[in-house]
Length: 189
Image (cartoon, rainbow, N blue to C red; front, top):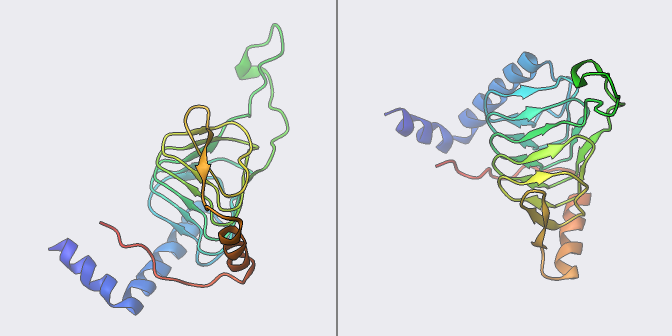
């Protein structure tokens, strides 16, 4: 019964969009998010640093753990249980337990436009995920990922290219250089 009602609401676009907008206004306030675009969306509960910067139509799935110093470009998708953290304890001080050893300066973590990080991806703070890159589910990102590459594994390594020709990449770059525009969201199962 609930699923049927949800499908009917999704079918009436203005009701669906209004519900989505109200829900996100609540979540932005709950997490103290002051630097996110009004179209940014969080799929459900998580732990998100209030200094998150997120551009238009970016998304964080349920259970996301997003540490400080993270920036998301437009159209970025972070799947469920993605974690962006680490790199935040000194361990090289002899005679001092790690818990008391201070923290190094935090490097920003940047996820560029139209990148997609799958289920349970872990990104070590300070990494840069290039424009249009894809990171496979369960991967651990320990270093920068170039634009339009597909990476997977532990640690993440290149497993492919997103586009098969330079012309396709240029066409996609051209679209991403335009102002963000609304499209139809993928249907949830």
